[in-house]
Image 1: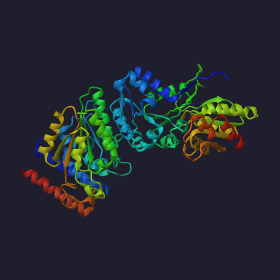
Image 2: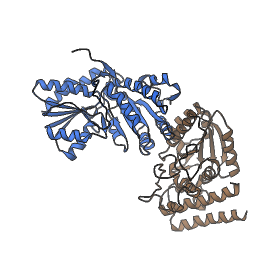
Image 3: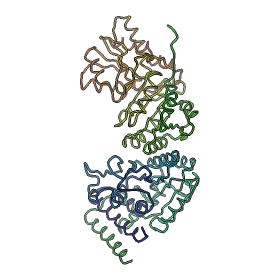
Length: 278
Length: 312
């Protein structure tokens, strides 16, 4: 996919995020929107996956460690053809396939149930280790929040991944700077994030997480990096693409009402139209 | 009394892993810097490439085990019960139980028979914690024979299994030609129609001792070994509830949430009968030699006998 197509797809993903959360009347838009470009790149460019055969053995794996942004994962999976887009509007409803946090048992394309923060990265590390032990070629990706890395388990996992030189593992930190209680550096600063991963023997790349050229370069660099895992620190804007949600901690875990939904969709339509002019 | 062979079930765990590991390449073992104590070191010696030391990071170890199982391995994640079931409870629940992954947890050093290390390391709550997790099978074997069979049964079962082992060497009581381990099936070790003693783990041999002492007093006790606490053998418990006057449960665990509670769950619903729970009575343990502690807390043969007599 070229850059313009990726941008258009990411915008479609953002619409799905907003629509599904509006329908659910609850959920987490801020972090879903901040990670939408990374998620688009992973599912439309980076990963070796097959929606027709979600369980194929040599596929690349993705673990959404910051599981609360499930709408971003679900939107990407639906756009990629894992299941009908109609499912997105049943998000979080009783009996629905799409649970509030990813459920690998019920949703095609979900490689791991996750959402309790700090746990997904360990599972991704286990998958990467397993690949090394079996001489398998697949790669493993996991996405964490910058608030999530306050969890101690993240650093247990990072220590192990660095120690075992798991160069088939890419840890992405969605560094949107905000968590539920406010700014991450006010609540309990995780900074300097890059230095921390470096200290745990990671190759670290810091990028603008909304710039597809930078994203593309970072994932290629990760692929070329041997003998150590890679951490991509993606600087992002929480709520990216929806004017009134951008950089607002209050939009971490609240769904738009009808009026807000209309504004949000209008914002995204405008972005989509501009992309069509390119 | 002739010399009885004694083996700690943690030793049986290590030996069984080697045996099964020779037959199955997908079996891998994880530890958190306790390989010498959990006895996974025995496996490490023969299969160094399939033994993964995660360092002192039990929560991470459970996640790594989950990732290994998703990608086709059969991981046995090992630590002390305190850390496997206690510290890593939520990882076991959310990263293993909820997705029903094929992870086996080998928890050694359960109960007060840890001995001198004292209360911080004596886990009397693990059965309670583990049996509340949907999809989790909980096994607490009574001796070497049963422990080895349990490890094999855990390997063959598809889904998460919690295996509870002890530090203390315990008598081998199941080395009979007819012994057969069936997951979820209790074993009647002694017939009797006055009362029933339902025991698990190292308390099974003590329960047999207690039954012998009761016999001398003219009390005919049935003794049932419950090695699988979940799913529990309801039939054998209901039968005992109907055929004997009172049930005594015996475990090296808190009386809250363990075997005793599991038995009460069955009896309350299916055959209301008085149950008296013998175990740690809502308190922590302490330092001391294991045998002395078991005596002090009335969890040896004599202690069980006395507690039953008091309740008769």
